[in-house]
Length: 214
Image 1 (cartoon, rainbow, N blue to C red):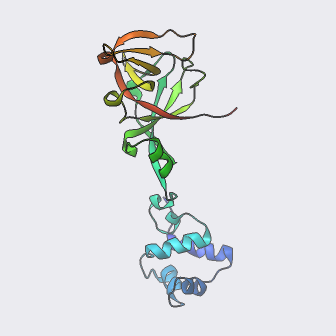
Image 2 (image 1 turned 120 degrees about the horizontal axis):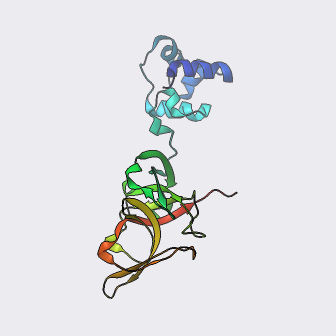
Image 3 (image 1 turned 90 degrees about the horizontal axis):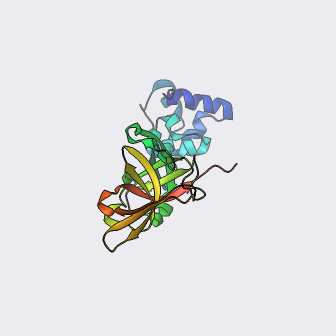
């Protein structure tokens, strides 16, 4: 919970050597405006444009001056939720572990060039295991497009549900007979050849990955 914006503003003025009258004039107000806000609570809260201007001036999050937490997010960024479950490139992670986690944020134009799906149809999942190495390694974060699945299924890497676990695998389609081969990029792991397309429970297509560089 953020402290009272009046207290924050008074502390900022004291720390930066600013005066209430100067800030009032910067906002195009009478010289007593900020002093009345801090000392008398009039107005009850700053207007949005005033709050934004003061936050930029002091280089602090807007939420400290009474703005919503969303106001601190840089413009042009699209939030994507992390799903707190691992998609196995190995033994498998139970699908029942799924739950919402913290957000990632991506540049809006970059994301639109990557997929037409809405951000609500996207999820960040962490890879577990090495069956997709070197393409994907344990600990990699993958961006999964939940809106790009069976209706547009094509060769590529997908998150699948198999026997109550989530797995990340490469799919190679044979459109004749609606068959598909489920592949591991790591040759140490066997493929699942000639699977019926109807037997594939697709969660989403992997469209991006990020990893820590050791």
